[in-house]
Image 1 (cartoon, one colour):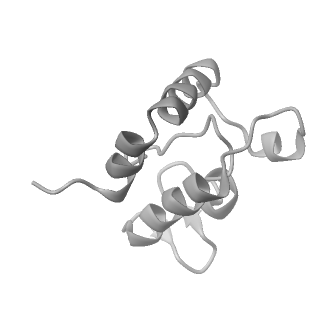
Image 2: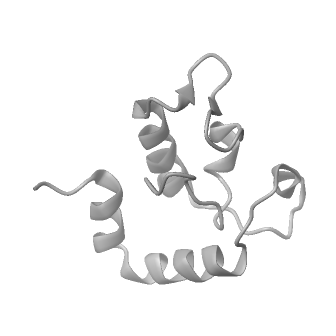
Length: 91
């Protein structure tokens, strides 16, 4: 079975992966207004782009609004928060 792009990113970035998991554990629930808080850690562009590319392939994404049917978040924004997670575990 071939690895997903996200699995390959994690494999190639072990230090960033550890930081990502710590941030996700610390922020069990990311709220929409967290994007307005400059103290909330942001994902690097490479990671945010990778996450969003996964969302674009997902059948749960409402393409018109870029909103997830599962969590209701606007995924083009949510993918930029370091502590955010996919509601169905894709990233």
